[in-house]
Image 1 (cartoon, rainbow, N blue to C red):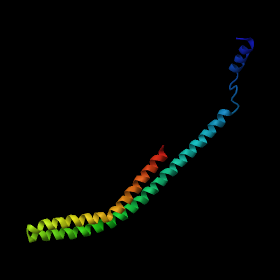
Image 2 (image 1 turned 90 degrees about the horizontal axis):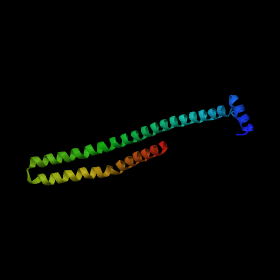
Image 3 (image 1 turned 60 degrees about the vertical axis):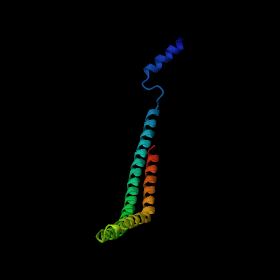
Image 4 (image 1 turned 90 degrees about the vertical axis):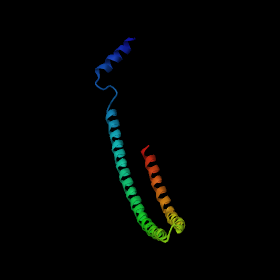
Length: 134
């Protein structure tokens, strides 16, 4: 080690912050600013997801009420038809059960489009939420 290197080492050992000149303070301020921005974006993301969940829930509830009323009306008619088949006798029971199943599946088929749309919206929302978290 030369005399110059020894002198240089001693000089920097005596200095408090030899090459800082406020660099660490500026970097700390930038990092703090970015962290505040990230927290703000995360908060806005949570609020937006809450609004999206509320909207999807409201639409799903409206569809469920509409589908539920239609399903209850059709199934009550089919139950009434099946009960009349029971009262009429055993030979008509098979036909009444078949008519009941056909009516229920037809009413479910009419609402399947709404069910699939709601399920697609929920899955799409879940995928969007997952992609924003990564």
